[in-house]
Figure (cartoon, helix red, strand yellow):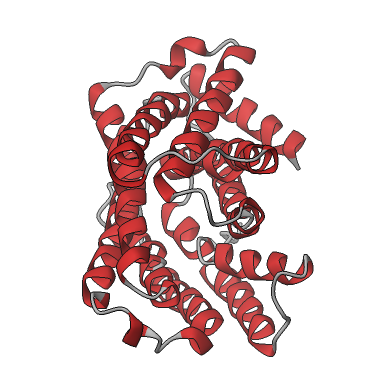
Length: 309
């Protein structure tokens, strides 16, 4: 899979460098690879343990992520492509840092199940907002597919909903959760407006996010020395769902099918739950089967239709 991703990414960038448009299907596939990587986030976070504060974990993983993207750029002779424009740099900080800050605030004030479900609205919002992009056609199939995906995500946390009694500031948490969804959706969609900026330019935004998260950690949390196992887990987080995934997603948003990728975004919580069950961190239920079926149906329903010759 990694070889295929690198191969597809290489050809996408080669086309862009030559002035030709990046193939939409290739870019969409690359963007979906980010969703697959995000599906490993819960498992890796579980393996990391809960004694590392959120902003500290963000600082470490985004530093590793920045190094990962920068290393790719250097290895492929595209180091100069890491230089962002001011708008792309500010957009990157908005999407990467502000999203995580609001999401962590949501988890602090609200029950995790409800907060996570509200935050997952980013995928539906991405579909809806994509209709405002020039040259993007939004059909009812995208909207219905996104609603099916949200239903699948809701089913996964249905049995955990209703625990807000122990959270006196739950409403504030819900507001932060919805805010995080808006931030990620608008960041994703607005990336299309700066499609000419190479995706390697995400690296500086990752480094800036790491520094801002470190500052928040020192002010609000305090540093905890990670164990060797936690360092290893956070390195894997930085290499995959926090590092490569953001560059892959950027390629998908800039050159792929934005609305369809929004629908596919709901595959992430389903993949995450399935992986947790496979590794023994959660118990299998009929709900997972129904959710998987819904996601597959949503993807097939929203998939671009081939034109008859």
